[in-house]
Image (cartoon, rainbow, N blue to C red; front, side, top):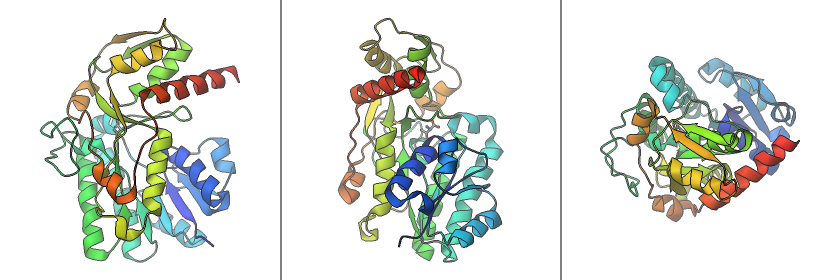
Length: 317
Ligand code: AKB
């Protein structure tokens, strides 16, 4: 029988969908969802749920011992836009939660960790197109600095203590089930809701700001397949580049207009423009494709069709 998995930050954008998918694969009772706040009812009722602060080592240790947890997915984090407003809070949450799980693994209390990194590890001096796995990074945001430091610590714990920690650099994630919170790529979810609800969207990025993006099903598939890959296949325990599609606000608007011709967009860039300008436009993910057969299924056309049909159905319900 498989030992339980603990998800820290299970009520967030990725955590929610990851919890649903892991429960459908391994059974509800084997997936312990946890978060600092309560989530939606279906998530809290379909399996064990614990109120848990990811920065509290003892509280996490208690849950791990109680359920005999073997793997932890650490999804709690403060994202790029919010982190610029609360730098110290972001650093404390993003780093202390990571040290907690790395140290629990070092002490032999858990066997495997998933920790998400981000395209935010790259900075203004990084090559923008087809950004390689290993390249000049120099992140210029609070969030990016915490993610790059986290990557270095993951590799250190793997090399020094043999900790099996695995990671991907998520691009902007798009989903109709959950809303993102506090990121720079959030516009790519908000725009679909606006298209359905009001037919108009005021975008906080400039029209030609191209960024790497991914539909949530692909992100969840990547995460689980990385975790299920044999350890010998994992060539980096820092973090894998993960690519799928890249587009700008005007391109996503055009793809929405194919379904809703009267949809309108205007542009009013704010402080998030500078963050977006420091990130890559597209990602070279050949190492992930080679090491654990990564391959995305959703392009912009399929994402738009899926988002609009599901959001329309949700409005009707
Ligand atoms: C953000 O915009 O901060 C995140 C990310 C790219 O990691 N979605």
